Every structure is written in structure tokens, then in C-alpha cells.
Amino acid sequence: MDEPLAPEATRKLIRQILQSGRFTYTKHSREEMLADDLTTVDCENVLRGGVVRPGEYLHGTWRYRVETSPMKCAECGTPMKTRKENYRYDECGLKYVTLVGAEVTRCPRCDNYEISIPHIEGLHRLIARVLIDKITRLTGGEVRFLRKSLGWSGSDFAKHMGVTEETVSRWENDAAPIGPQADRLLRLMVAQGRLTTNYPAERLTKINPKKATITRLEVESRDKQWELLSA
Ligand SMILES: [Zn+2]
Image (cartoon, rainbow, N blue to C red; front, side, top):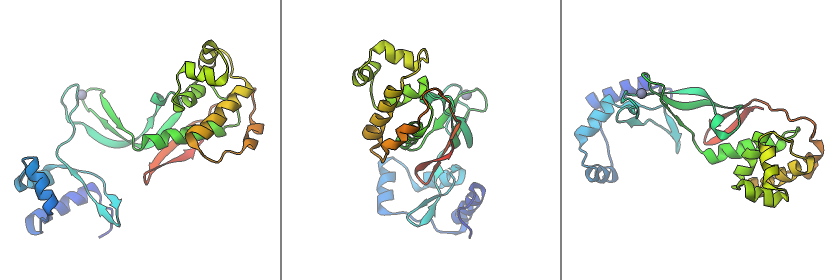
């Protein structure tokens, strides 16, 4: 048997197991069932009619989860469908980040959807890392992203940078470019504070303060880690 099985093959196998195989469960599962007022008949129904999720590799074996019923749209009650998409992650405050193969659950009737992001902390850390490594000046949106990633309000940030709140606001709204010293200081604070990672000061010699270019950023979650596909 070649694993992982596709959801359709998993469903077929489940039907065979229910017909002629063996249904096994532990003492722990029995207690959980009883606590939730479920019986083995409910289990059979879920296994037969539930939604089969793609296999997940855990502790040396492939596991296949079956979920009760498709999630219903909170707006119109229609069962929703989940699939993998390339998702423009504008909500992070940057307009050029794409989550490759993200799990998006959409309503086929209205335009409601739900996006599910695994280990979001690692994702934001990766984006911050890419930003402090770029060799052109930070844009307003990038300044705001890094400032927020430090957990600071505009006024906290102004105090740390030794500037006024108005100056911070001008930087973040692209009304004035962040100066070369402030740009470098912000990168260092992110490297020290949030990322606590190796960030050679030499990098700071390579930043061009005259340009503030952006690069499209594609990231993908693989094996519990966010990876950069392109930048
Ligand atoms: Zn809907």
C-alpha cells in the first residue's frame, strides 16, 4: 500500500474496514465517547459519511482524520468546501505576501470564506526575517509590520527611536522615508528582540537608503515550518 492515501482511496478503505475489517479502540477513546454522549453507532456513521482529511505523518505512521460533517457557512448555512489555494495574505499589512497551498474553506453560495493558518508565529517571524535582510530601505508598510512584530504601539516605537509620534506616522504612511539610521536601528531591534538570531552588523553596510523596493514574497508551510519559496 503506497502511502499517503488519497482521500478517495481512504474512504474506500474505511468502507471495507466497516464491512469486513476490525474496528479497534482504546479505553481512553471509550471514556471520551461516553463523556460526549457518543456511541459506536455514531462512530460508524462518522467513518462512513464524514469528510476524510489528507494523511498526516505522525510518529512514523500515516494518520487519516475523518471529520463529522463539512463546516457550514456562518452567513448562509451552505456546507463549505476546503481546498488548497495560493492566498494573498494582505491581512498581515503587506500587500505582496502569498501563502502557497494555504487551506481555504469557501462557501459555494456566497463569498464567505475561512482561511486557516498553521503556526502563525513562525510565519510572522519568517516575514520579519526577510524584511530585515532586504537591501533597500524599508517601506512604510514594512516599518509598521516590524514595529507591530515588536509588540509596540506607535508611541512606544517613537520613544524607542527617539522621534515624535508624528514622525513615526509619516514613516508608516509613506509621507516621509524612514532615515538610514532609524531604518538600521529598527532592523537591529527586531533581530535582537524578536528573532534573537544571528544578524551580522555588516549587513547594515549594504542597505541602499535611496530605494525602497518591494519583492513578491511566497511562503509555504511544510512539516510544521514556514519556508520561503521566493523573495
Ligand atoms: Zn455562504
